[in-house]
Length: 142
Image 1: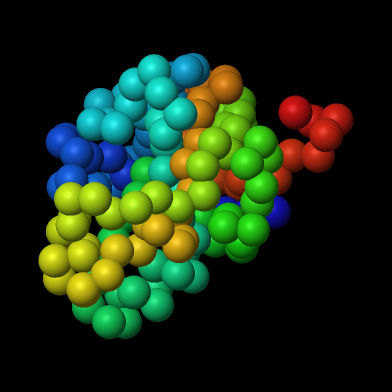
Image 2 (image 1 turned 90 degrees about the vertical axis):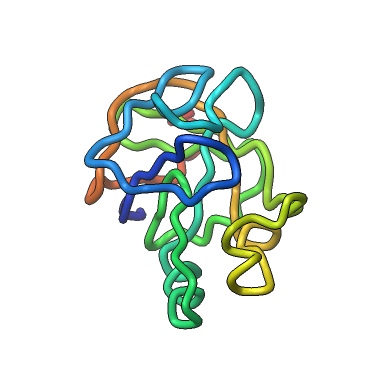
C-alpha cells in the first residue's frame, strides 16, 4: 500500500508541474488540463516521494503527475496495475530519455525521469487527491 503525496499538472510540455488540490483522471486520456494528457501510452507520470526528496536535498524542485510514497515504482513491471479509489492505471513504460533537457536537467545536470519515473495509461477514471491510498493490484483485482 502506498500514499499519494501530490497530484500535479503542467500547462505545457517541458515545464515544471504544479500541484493541484485534486486531479480528474479521464479514461484513456490522462489528467484533465495536463499538457501530457492524450490518446497515447504516457498519459500519467509517477515518481516516488523518496526519490524526489533525495533530489530536493540537492536543490531541485520536482513534481510529476502523481508522487507516491511507499511503493517502489521502478520495480513494477510493465502491465502492472495500480488502483486509487475508482481510478485504475496500467504501467506502460519505465523511465524515459530526457531529450529536450528539461528544467530539472538544466538546474541539476541530470534528469530524474530516465531511471526513476514510470508512465501509465488510465484504464478507469476518477478523482485523486493528496493523502489518498494507492495500491498495486493483484491479478484478481485488475
